[in-house]
Image (tube, rainbow, N blue to C red; front, side):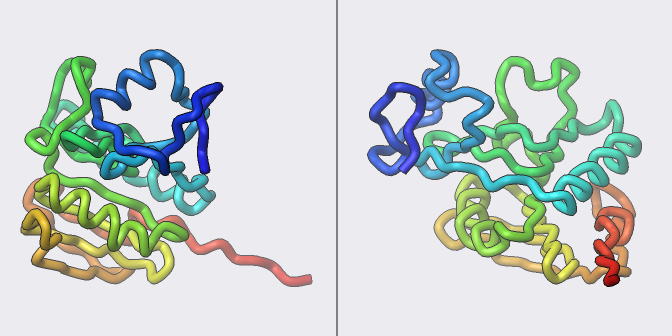
Length: 199
């Protein structure tokens, strides 16, 4: 059970709308140190970020920023708003370009081309719970960068209540051409495996 400050409210006790969640952030009931996100009305703790996960996020930043500066907005580990009950923080968001950097409000599904979750310990959550949230919000494309099996899972054609109806899997070492992002060479995005030396 998670509590915030002196509040007796817990994420297990009630459903929150995005508007109420924002009010809690503005009033500092929830602060940046709390590391939470709003999923289907529940305020849920986020998993700690490991070294390989962080390295993969940085790879997306370096590659996509360089390629699409001034054409697309690339956000990493920042919120998106899916009304009325969800404000997840995907690892990567590719959205329409906004010269104001979305200062007037987080991107919504109408702004978003695709979201990316980088998954190791969160793989099952990302394949089920986040999968349903993004499909119900009609985010057109959802990628899972699967660090466990070192593959990209690309989901398209969302149907609310049913999930994504098309799936493609690309293995490390492969490349594919994306209609918006161009050539995607998986080896450019995956961090190298950690080799543990034995004495």
